[in-house]
Length: 141
Image (cartoon, rainbow, N blue to C red):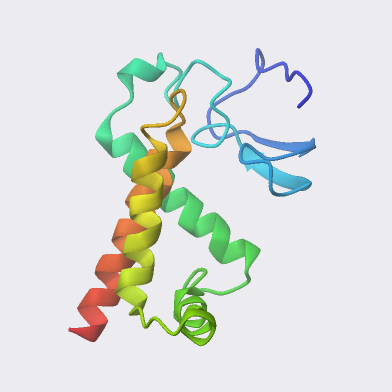
C-alpha cells in the first residue's frame, strides 16, 4: 500500500483512495479514515487512539452499517446473512440461523482483536455484527 499523507485529514472527511482498503479486499472505495484507516494515530475526535470511548466505537459501527446501506442500495442496510447461512447449509449440510451467522462474524472480529496490532475496525464491525445478531434474535425468538 502506498504512503498516505493524513496530515490534512479532518474527522469525517471522505477520501477517494485508489488502492486496497484497510482489509485489502476492495480495489477502489470511498472511505472515511476514522474507524477504517488505523494508520492515523488519532481518533474521530482528533485525540490519541488511546482516548477513544466506547461510544465512539458504537458510532463508527453504526456509520459502517449506514455506509453498507448506501453501498448495497437498501434502505434497511445490507442484510445478506439469511442468504449466506442458506448457502452455507447447502454446501456443508450444517444449519445455522441468521442470528448464529451474525454471531459467527462477531466472534471472528473478536478473534482478530487478539492478532497483530490495534485495528479499530475489528471493534467497530464487531459491535455492528453483535447488534445485527440482536436484531435477528428479536425477530426470531
